[in-house]
Every structure is written in C-alpha cells, then in structure tokens.
Amino acid sequence: MLQKNDDARLLVGDRIPDLFLPELRQWARRKQGYHFTRNEIDLFRVAAVSYADASRPSIAQSYRLLCALVDEDAESNALPVRKPSLTTFRRIVKSMPEEFVRYMRLGRMRRIRTFEFVSAAAVALDIKLV
Image (tube, rainbow, N blue to C red; front, side):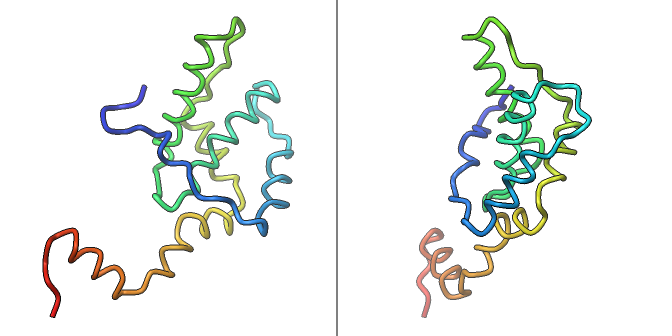
C-alpha cells in the first residue's frame, strides 16, 4: 500500500530515448525462471522501468507502484494478478540494461549547469544573488 505523500505513480514520466528501445525490448522478451505467467512478468517489467527515472525512486517505491497496480487490477478482474516478493522484483529491476538505467536516472542531471541550479535554489529560497 502506498504511504502518505508517496504516490508512486508520479515516478514515471520521462520519455525513453529511441537509442535504448532495442535493448529494452530484448530484455522484456528474455525468459526468466520465475513462477509467474508471461502477462504477470510483463507487468512486473513495466513497473520495473519506473525505477529508471530522473527522480531516482528507490526499488521499494517502484515495488509499491507495482503493488498498487495489482491491487487496482484485482478490484476489476475475477482472475487477480499475483504479486512478486520484493526480492524477486529487485532481481527484475537489477536485470534491466545498466546503461539505460544509468542514463535515465543520472544522465540528465549532469546537463544542469551550476548557475541554473544555484539560480533555481536562490529563487526557491527567496535569496537575491549579487
């Protein structure tokens, strides 16, 4: 269950660059030794991609997103989707292409210039820079 002020749905946002799509699709098709249906694993992988976000959510936050999706789905379907353990979900997240995760979580942060960061902080704190 999502905790107060922890709406994990806000974690997904940035568009995935075309450069990473072939490798991500290959990752999504990879067979694993999990004891879940193909549809369940596909859903787990979709939720795992939320980990690769510039807001840098934790694996636990992405897991809560998955659990919220499964719970919501269970309310409207007669055949509910099973939830993986946090350990299983962590394995799925860690199996994502490393370069993709690194770029999505950290890549855009390096493009911010120091002046832009300081200026934004100064405005937020109502401090005038000289």
